[in-house]
Image 1 (cartoon, helix red, strand yellow):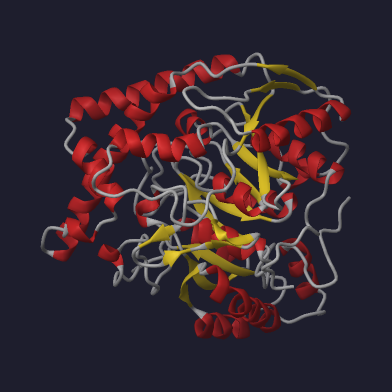
Image 2: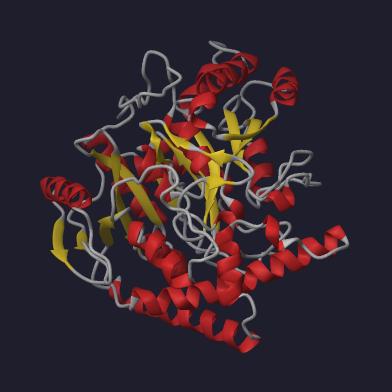
Length: 480
């Protein structure tokens, strides 16, 4: 089994073990993470707010061994993941001075597991972009090449993990926002099954059930152990995923799965996949076959443009609802001139849909989920490139008011055409860092399993990690 350590870095479980054995104090682990963040953040711009002083105060009071992640430093994405007393801007100028009055349930669970939150991470406004760039924060940059995007919307969390500031960080994912930056930054990103991770206490679901929270990590075992901590419905949750028979962490041990039926999707019309991304798929197919799995070509049962039209009916409607709520809290309507241009475009075309239109869109994604469930009776997992195009440079994935929603769809989903389908279907999915292109940029391989089969994906990820480990691959901008 992998040790998940280098001479200067340990994953979260190894860190907690070192704390429990007295090899390092909790104050030392937190201070070291702060020092690492200060070393790389000027180049990467991944921090939204620094909570250093309160983190060190908390660390001084914490007792070693309390929780599976005792003494592990933590960063929380600044996007609908409230940290009591910290700013929650949601990446928007409209929220630049909003202070969260309570913790998200997932934040509470991480705290109980022993993590120490020392800051929040950048996100694009309302999480609707595959690049972490905003008027509020500027551009978050990729540690493998700072001229390129870090992915979105959990880009700030991804760059901090990739640069080895901390072992894992909390983000969320409504259309690929964990897996896209994980691919872009060469780390492991996992989106759990719908309902497995709670959304409370403020809301019951995000984007009609398409959104969920979880961590991005270096090691698979950290990610699985984090889902053991985060998983399970909170009080009053509208629905919950099936209960697991064993811990997710235990699924990462042992010989790994055998003879999986793998369906491969290489392209998603109307877009084509770049040769660099196809090369990553080809290498992954060869690796799977060498491990004894059975691979065949397949397609997804969906028209991508029809699908995205329905998805953005939901996004547009819920963005209108969000702005209405923010205006109610502020006592005045929100100033749309402070929004990013893409939101004015989305609202212009999808901001005034009827209740029936919204219901139709929800019914559409539910019907799509049924079709995907039928497809999964033929396969154990699906494989596709996480991204269909190489990482673009900063500023490339931006639009202005002259663009249309169709322009936005082609720009964003030509880059990442696959990930959002698995949000709509509620299936677990992951991006695994198995390939780097000739120019040194990471290219993730994306896997999905049937609803509720999160443990199977973790078992496969651990098998792939063992066969082709990535923990020692450090980006040029690294804290170690």
